[in-house]
Image (tube, rainbow, N blue to C red):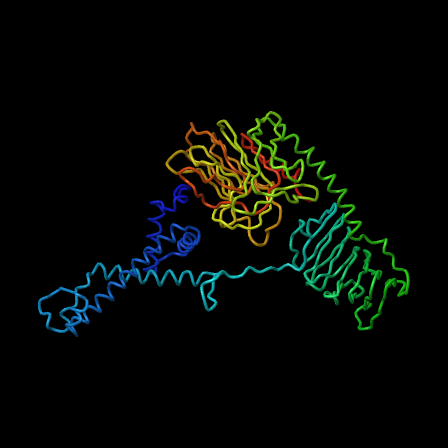
Amino acid sequence: MSQEERDLGRLSDEDTVKLNSWLHDLEEHQLAEPDRKALETMLLGSEPARRYLVQRLGMGAALCRLADESQESGDQEGDSPQGLRAHGTSVHLEGSHRPGSLKRAWPASAKLALAASLVLCACTLGLLFLRPGLHRNDGPMVQAEVTDEGCAVLVDVVGAQWASDGGDWQVGMSVPAGKVKLQSGLARLEFYSGASVTLEGNSELEIVSVNEAKCRFGQMRVHVPPHARGFKLMTPDAKVVDLGTEFGLKVSDSGKSDVHVFDGEVEVYPGTGDDKLNLKTGARWNAEDGAGTTGADTQAFADIASLHAQSQDADERRTLEWRVGLQKFLDDPRLLVGYTFEPLNAWDRTLRNQQPDAPEFTNGSVVGAQWAQGRWRGKQALAFKSPGDRVRLAVAGEYDAITLAAWVQVGGVDRNYNSLFLTDTWTHGNPHWQIIRSGAVALGVHNGKGSGQHVLNTPVLFGPENLGLWFHVASTFDVRTGMLRHFVNGRQVDEKKEAKVDPSSRIRIGSGELGNWGLPEGKTPRTEVRSFNGRMDEFLMFKEALSAKEIERIFEIGKPN
């Protein structure tokens, strides 16, 4: 289906033929599994397809009513001639005095249509009810709830370097049960139970549950509020149970534990036995020296204050490194638009194009969207939330290729189409870059043939499991080669070569918007809601298709951690 047909809410001829064919096969119990999935996808993802189905079902219902009326009329005619008068019917058929002979003939074609519609209705409902992920709950059909396997959230890092076999974590990620291996730097985890762990490199922490973890080696400070009382840390030679306080734990490479109690009370179970030691504020237990009522050294363990102090220094260095690294691309003569999302003050409503020779009209005008924290502390982003939020901009000229790249933090895929960048118009050469309902990123470029387009979708990227995380997305299209490409976090995830591209085609931008689509004015006082729900931090538009190496470099320069 073409973009325009989607926009106009119509099925293409091709989709109509496919839909009819699948529904026919469904009626005949001959629908192959790939076609069943394709039908399911079409019905769930296409409003025009659902409307078409409803019309078909409506036709079935109408036929049912007609059949009922005919049957009722026939019964009345046969059983009670007065019934005819009551309905004001003037039909007189030969032999009307005989019961049953007054029933109107039910055309064979209508019977077949009715039967087909009823079968279709039953099959379709069965299809939808049997679809994995949907179930009835003594009421309307509802979407199965999404589940979360996380036990903790990574809330802060300073210079964190992760072991290659211990996960590549980003601030904001939910961390499930399993090993977290921090080679250097600091990382703060908040368990769902309320306990928090400030982990120092070099450490290995295995999360067991929301209330328990194991440390094979390393060092950490643990804070346990009253409602997380009983939080357990297992080491190779002890079990430590916090009764609602704060303590430090060191585990040597040889597995020897060293517990420091800073506040409150901790139970230590040496070895594997049930004997325990109760350590109170200021006490220390060392696997080699035993327990003492003093000796706890709070300065030996990083706390939140020191983490934040180090984090601020690290964020300032990070911002400086990013600016220096990105400058090469901002100075690139191929750059059309370079927004770095660095406002002059909190009420600044302009995104300044950082391309040195850029005309003023390429600066973005911020509408509705609000400044918020970007990829790291001290870095700003724009938060898009309401249907009116957008950034207006304009780009003149015609080009052989285009690259669109942005850092985005998706807050939800709320619409069928969620704009990243859309031109106001949808005509020959206009690019539309957006996130579709499934969670995939789509780049479409109008090909000038009716409502056709050159289009490529990424695999599904965004879902409940990664909302709130920063992603770098980039897409390219080269008219001369017909190549469409998508990149996510510096890696190419999909490509497609268009077989037929009009050699006279050019990329045309004109006026457009970040995070929304079009102005409700003139003959279109209302526009479809395609607003973006999330944050955007950095947007680059080039008049060439950048290479994979160049896009990887932009990602490396700007990645949050």
